Structure formats: C-alpha cells, structure tokens
Amino acid sequence: MNELLEKGQPRVNWIRSRMQLLRNVQEVFEREKPFKNKTIGVSLHLEPKTAVLLETLKIGGAKIVGTGNLGSTQDDIVEVLKSWGMTIYGERSTDKEEHLSNVLKIVSAKPDLLLDNGADLVELAIKNNLDGTIFGGTEETTSGDDKLRTKFLNKINFPIIVINDSPLKRIVENQHAVGQGNVESIMRMTNLMINGRRFVIVGYGWCGRGMAHYLRSFGGRVSIVEIDPIKNLEAIMDGFRVDSMKKLASWGQFFCTATSRESVISTEEFNMMPDGAILANSGHFPNEINVEALRKLAVNIVKIGADLEEFELPNSRKLILLAGGQMIELAGTEPKGNSIEAMDLGFMLQALSLELISKNPEVLKNGPQPVPVNINNRIAQLMVENFK
Image 1 (cartoon, rainbow, N blue to C red):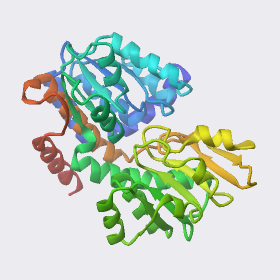
Image 2: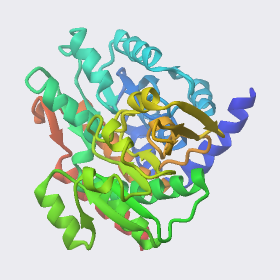
Image 3: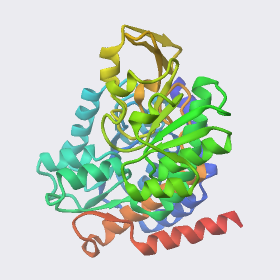
Image 4: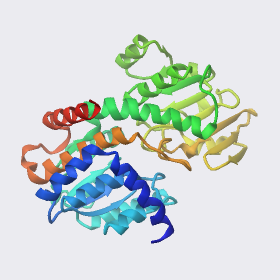
C-alpha cells in the first residue's frame, strides 16, 4: 500500500462509519444495481465524504470516470478511489487548463449519467455534441445552475436535477454546514478572534446567511451586501446592517463572498479597504474576488504560510487573501469541508436523483429542475429519525 493510500483509507473508513443515510442506500443499491452497465462521469470535490458517495454509486453497478474540482482535490482520496477500480484524473496541484483537459477526458469516455459541480462537465458535453446519448445528470451548485440557465437553457436535451434547489440542502448543508464551516476555516487559517471584529458578507443567500448568523454567534459585528431587495429586507429583519459595497469597503475588517457572481470585490474596493483587511471566498468558482486585479494592483506580495498571502497596495495598506481566493472550506492545507451529517444528506439527494434518472428519465423534463418532492420528503424523514 502506498503512503497516500495508507493516509486516505482510514479517513474514508471513519467518514463512512458516520454516514448512515448513504450506508442504508448502499444496501439497497447492492441488491437492485440501478446503475448496472452505466458509466457515471463525475466532476466533484474529491474528499473523503465524496468518496463514500462514489463508492455507493459503484456498489449500485456504475463505472466511475471522474475528476476533482479546481483547487480542492485531496490526493490521498484520489488514491483510494483508484484502488477501488475507478478512473480518476487530476491532483491537488492541477491548474485550470489541466482541469478542463481532465473534464474533456471524462466527456470522451461517453458517460451515460453526469454528476457535476459547477457545470463544467455538462458544458463540455454539450459543446462536444454528446447530449443526445446522455440519460441525464445532477448539478450540485447554484453557480453551476446559473451557468446552465444563462448559457444553455434551451440547449440541454436531457434532465438535470439541481441539488442546490432542494430545501433540505439549502437549510442543512448550505446555511448550517457551509455557514459554520466557513467561519471555522477563517478561524483556523488566520488564528484570529471573531469577537468584536467587523465582517462584510457579500451575498445573503443560504450560505451567506449561515455565515452571518454563525459569525454573530461568535461575537462578530456583521453587515450584508446584497442586490436582491427581498433578501436585503430579510437581512434587516434578521438584525443585520445592510448597505452597499462602496460604503462598507472602508468599514469592514473581514470580507467574505457568497454570490456565484464574478468580481463582486475588485480594484475600487481594494483601494478603500483598511490596512490588514482579510478576504475570503465561499463561492464555487475562484473569481468572486478579482484576484488577478489584486495581483496587478499590488506593489509587493508576501506568502504567509500555505494559506495566506499579503498584498501591499500603492497606498501602503496591506490586504490578506485566504486560500488564493478558492472556496475557503475545501481549499488550504487542512480542508475539512461541510460536516459529515450534512454531506450525508446532500449526497443522499445525489444518489436518489441519479437513481431516478437512471431508471425513469422519461418522468423528468429536459434541462435544470429541482429535486422531486418525494425524494426530499423521504430523506427529511430519514434524517429526522436519525436525530431521535
């Protein structure tokens, strides 16, 4: 057994032992083999909890061909997946060009089903005219759903179940798991106190509101930037200050993005931020903070350990960027990701959605759509039973 495999296998074993929902599905899939003779193409964060999901699909008869998402792949988990007979491309150091090349390799394998996170896989499948042979797929994120709806809305000839549209995922995973996990990541990477510090959360969706509430529970002073007037009102009703980025840029000490939009923090804001301000991104794609603009603006850049970079600006102020602007929970040297129980629920949504597409794709329409109500209700009841 190689060193990476020796490291990764115990981690996966521990995670599996706490993912009761997926373990129950594994028993069913082993009997029924819903993915027999089917290839599932995967573009997903490759970490221990994901490994249990892919194991579940393999137990259900699937052949797995996959790659990680940019900046979050854990090399020991890749070795575990390969030891299970899966075809996996990429590693922690994979850059954007290599990542897209790996996604293209998956598309070239002509998968029957797609398990996507950020819509890179669906995008290349459509561009390479494979959408006529695909049964359907799932998309994990709001970022991926936005891409599908803006670029390919009437061009997708198969169903895509958007996991982030599930109320279960929004409440359990996004608000509570991502919200808490992002705060823990900030604390771990900076080793700084939350109490009394000024936080600006850009985006009051489910992840943003989760961060805001957890930061406040630790004693942080939190303000919200949001373009949706209804979400603005909700933030005010929740007791948060709401203002524009222009007004809050000089006020905040920590800034965290959660919008699925590009360059919501860029040069104008960088020049207004106080000395020592810290920047982090919660979104799937590493472009919500315009890191390229920050690098061009800086007169000096200092690497502070593995997870922090200090940028000295022409105005002599210094800004700190966490994890290179990558998704803060799964980037950095000690990535933890969401809690095991939250991902157990989220991956149960994935597994049952893919099962439905594999067995009965005709009951679904083409294009992006929410998780069916009966799947949501079934999983909610199972999780309630687990908490009793």
